[in-house]
Image (cartoon, rainbow, N blue to C red; front, side):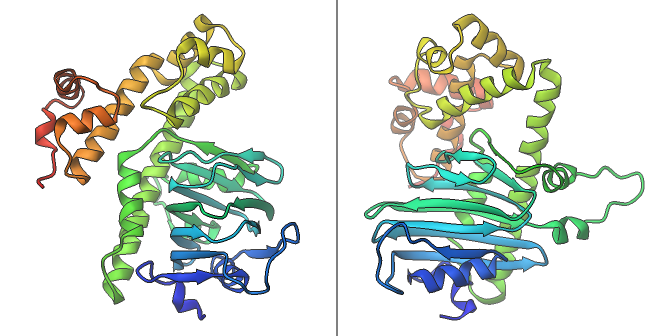
Length: 334
């Protein structure tokens, strides 16, 4: 299977070790076969859609929707780079990153991983599960091509900083903008040159949104007045509620999970993110509802129910208060 085979996500492929090594090579990485699990040589371990290609020097796009046919451990050596993406559906087991530890990706929450040096990563695929997502990878070759004129603001400074800092992994709250462009990347309806232009536009939009999220998070850290440990605790609370935004743990349960009392956690969360935990959950539910209304042709009552509102009237009132218009204004026609 040649490199061009991974230039589109519209066809279905069977992925074995040789294809995995080719995909890694396309992305400037090195894949290693793991001896931890028995397997047939070159036997496919996954089937589905796969996209992996370079759009510009140092700028890569990936998208996938795969069903795993057998258990597999995937080991990759990442080169110095920044990876950012979103998982729509994926494995429960976390990724293992040398020097960082275990990193659990959270469905529908953008993540960024910065690799300062060649770094070993290990992922686990379980037979019978499905994984889908999309994102991008950049290296210094791409950021160096974004020249900034004297006196202009270096808007990509957060990305440059990640490339220059130590290896790290960070999650962000759900972003409708990032999710929409990631989904478009996976569902690219075009072929030929139009496909290339479409993909590049989607990836550049994801880069812009990721840069905003990184800068916003860094700004919060500085403005909160919290210590690094305190801010990370608040961020951990945010990550936990994002895992199940419809039915998150209670404040008391959240406090127990993080080993801190309710009053302290509430104060630190408000300082970190400018809202109460309840307010954060409510706003995230409404943002998800807006995305559902725009993309899935659901009734208003069903949309509200999906994001945790038992009463359609209460949902409509909260929606209007959050966005300044009723949910019907955003509803996709059937």
